[in-house]
Image (cartoon, rainbow, N blue to C red; front, side, top):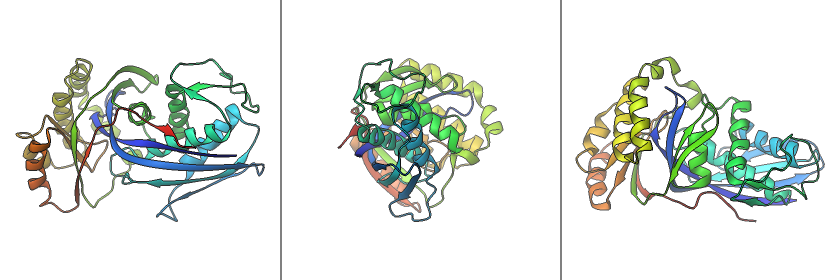
Length: 303
């Protein structure tokens, strides 16, 4: 019983920590999960390149899929990623989505675009008569993230962008998809050497910028994503204690720029020529500056 799948990293339009409403967009950076199921009843996990990495999330993803569609199987999950960990680029959401899809594949559960009411009670079984759509598969990973304690909000905004592609706006309190749109941007990412874990973010300080978050949500729901990003980036950089200099450097040349997630990465979107000018500034900073693009196809089953 083997499955393999890949899911996307993402950048932030609106951080959900202030109000529970969030928005993110998928980027061309992937995490791959390989799942082998057996009759051991116990799930083990490894992360390529991080032998001491925390595998609670991906193990819980396997367990939740098995609880709903399987018959008590255990096994092993291994993830490998182009998405930097703890950098604000949704590495956890990508790992969760890839693991969920790989486990569904191992159980021969079809994943489609249309919601299908199958095993909604969470009963176990052999999975042969069950189906699931990608939005609901995404929710399995979100619930696993809450179980594992690796997220404050549940990160349905990040997870939905990673799973569905494009840009999404969500109500994370209800795990409700408010909007999805397809965008075609060039993207520039600056990732400093420091790392920041979402679960460690100062939620109380973020809640103080709720009026700005409400404005960002209105802009995003109106399709004004670049403006939304920039307002979000300034507000949450201040709330979370990150410098605003990288955003100010990018503003004359980019359509939008924001702190991504709870940092420390900063993402800018726009035309390639403009982003090359931003790169001239950011490449002088310590860390990695790298170009990518948006993706609209979302996560996929490989095998």
